[in-house]
Image 1 (cartoon, rainbow, N blue to C red):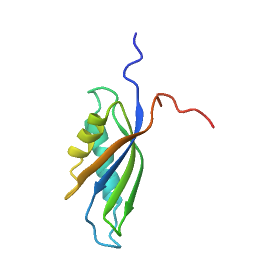
Image 2 (cartoon, rainbow, N blue to C red):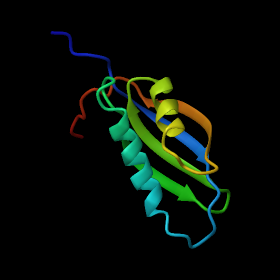
Image 3 (tube, helix red, strand yellow):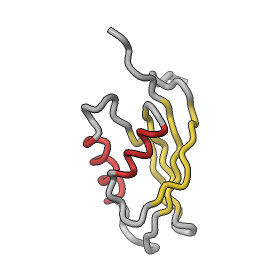
Length: 101
């Protein structure tokens, strides 16, 4: 049996307009829900970190996925209003296993 596609860590930056002081817990819930919707298609992406920078309306996320296209698809179906993916780059190649360190 083949080990399957290799997972990598990507950093995705989105523009997300939200008023200062707004509770953004729904963003994490929306991203988790999008990850679940992608299960069964292959290894599903995982959100490892998400940080909102209200000064410039940026949402920076670290996502574990098999490809850049999987990351883009994740945000496409995440239903985040007014979100636009600015960039997706590999931050760690070959991270199929998390190594202690």
